[in-house]
Length: 159
Image (cartoon, rainbow, N blue to C red; front, top):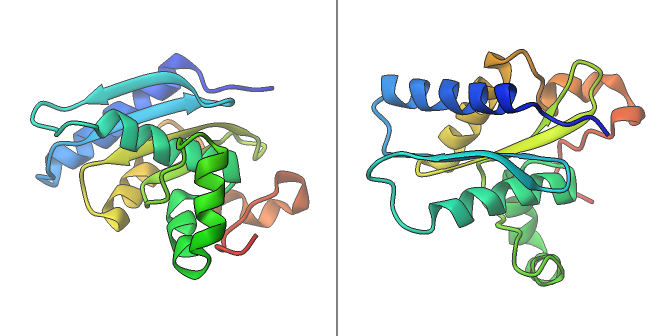
């Protein structure tokens, strides 16, 4: 199974934190995980509040475990809270259904990891995920949507 490299993971985090600084965002915490949700890299900016590692990890975990952005998990939670509560419990409380977690794909559309960001607003965290992924030449689910069933892109909150 292909996995994100340390250089790619660090590049994603660096691009996200640089963009956030340019935009004068609140302090962020950013995690990049490889398949199996093993931590590849994590940074927590000075001034970032407590529990940010757990939140960023939970967003990345949600994206990998369910094959969609963590924002889509939040939307699903609004429609089917009992279903999402079950998924959270089944994951031993590792899933955090809040926007800011996205899968990372290689040029062939294979999932090689995920990124999770916490500290800003949900939509902005998602934009920063996309920026970081693209900054190192990798792809998002949306980039791979036209690749067909082989890459199994899910762009809706429906299972």
